[in-house]
Length: 257
Image 1 (cartoon, rainbow, N blue to C red):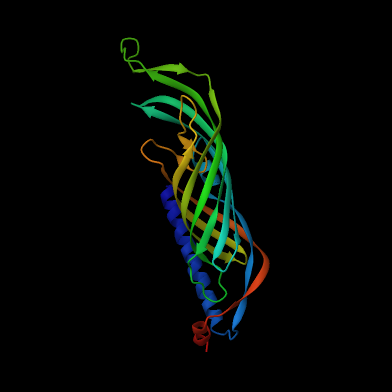
Image 2: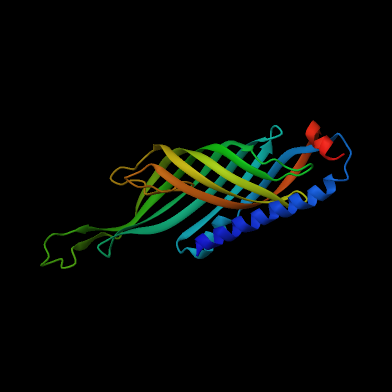
């Protein structure tokens, strides 16, 4: 279900890019100016995927604030701040081995480069970028069982170890992300966006007698790999702070004549 929802978002954003391009292209045909002012400023919004997942997935809550600041014509300083909490369990042979809750916050800092060739006056983006991310969190082992090889007393193989929660605090992890994203201006200064992220753990501070199985901002951690995949889709508002004049390329000027 979630996969189809993501596909619909991609189609919607692609349609928005095409609609905006068609509208601006018709306006460009009557322009005879040699330049125009580009807007520079701060764009701030929220990630809509985490409230959606909070509604769809039991035991999960999360939110994320997204933002970027335009440094040059095609380079943006980007940041994401978020908080997540997730309760889940590990099953072995259809028996619950342990149940745990992870809760914490994270920050991601990096840059995005716009690779989309806008028509005259457009502000849509297809970006590639990178992030350095850091997460600070805690884990609570809510309960656990252990395997008992004596099947006379333990026919199911697992015996309850404890129902007393065990807390592991002051945990942290860091990772790098490669980000592929897009943003479309639906209305004046109002943007919808989406990104897909490929992450690689750099550090992971495991607790004593346990390990980090899920990291806020990174998602699931496995023994086999330090790689992870994530995504977000956002709604944001761009606050113009100042403008810079952009000279149109010669071929663009000639195409309007």
